Length: 267
Image: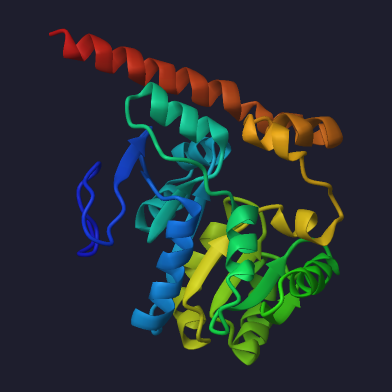
């Protein structure tokens, strides 16, 4: 445990509570609280990179197979509940969270803050998508600053170019849309270079640029409130069905843990 953390389930001044979901930490944070935390980091700890992971069930299952990915999640400064499955699992296990913080919601909230210190670099997605997303962000949120955007890729041979562009742009916030787990691992592997480039906050945002750019429409708000955004995405992008196979596996493991805890409590 790092010095700035408290044990699971404990709240303290400025320290969010954490719960465990299948052995991985999830912080109990609302979106406004997370935005405030990011702005605090920019002012109080500008020389250190802070990694945020937005966790969903697919990532939990991937972390069970990939030790490096699991270690990256465990070392992250903050882990939010992105997928509705994480929220439901926490509730079933008696560790309820106050809500979800998705990658796209976080990006939009930070952009809407209008803080001049929140300069962004958008890295990833298909060619041209990051640039289009950047233009739409600036147009939609007056005061939002984007200092660079580039597609790039997580391949090692392209990391030098990406890092050079980031160093030239000097963003405070780096948004990486390589998809999990590649985006989280890329941030963790290049922590020192990113710190030297002035990056204070780095977060993997998955397909957020596709939505922000308008390339892919986001689910209607009523469906998002019901936690059915995944179903809307599956209908519009049926090729995602293979990725959705992780969901029943995740659910089965959560139920097994719930049963084990109930039986253990009766002894």
